[in-house]
Image (tube, rainbow, N blue to C red; front, side, top):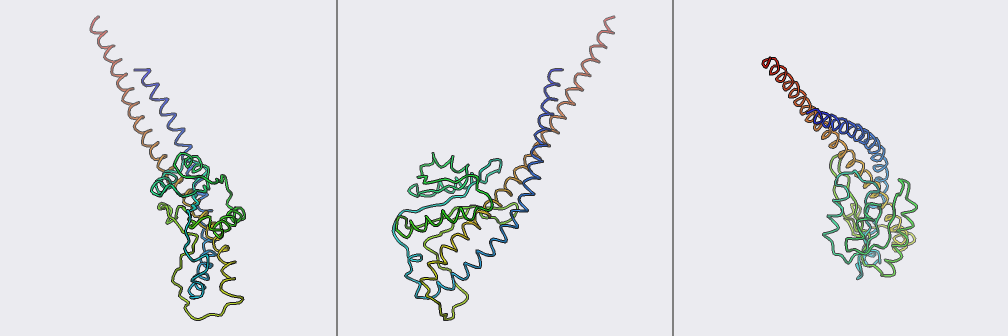
Length: 275
């Protein structure tokens, strides 16, 4: 019984140590979430404004045949945003589950170390991977998108998609897909006839890449916000589970200790009766 008590006591110490670690990680994730959420919201204002301007220009009939709008044949290029670190609950597994529902003929560019490891055995063609990108990686993403836009214009690809994790609130986030090219026309509130200088075509040639750079950076920050929220939720659940397990082990330890005391008393009484 003594060895059983010692084993339970060691388990209690181990669980207590794990609880301290998960609680600290929860606090760190909460701090990062608050900071990342503010940056995400600021960037989203800019990308939303660009989308409004783009929608206004595309509402003109003269833009219907622009290469960035017209669908063209070709393979699909898909950019996928995953995390660089683990311990973030179902954040990455939700993305993997979504990708497994897609056709395997898509080429993949993976943003995130975790996804780069998974995609190699998934059946997709991995073109390139980027790991440990910083929050201020706008220029790096812009260079990537410049190459992708050039490949789309050369008709190497007929469609460019972005798979990311959409942030709804601190406990809710879901995998979403955004079509980057060709541009999906959305209704514009400004339908009045407008005069463009130099022309709609030349404006779109510059505005569309600008919009794509802004939207992919905005979605990257949104994915990172979702990652921190998922990690905070996972660490909170782990902390609660550790506390519950610690209480159960403490109960088992007390029961074992009481059983040992009862056994000792019984042995003493039995010895006295024998005399």
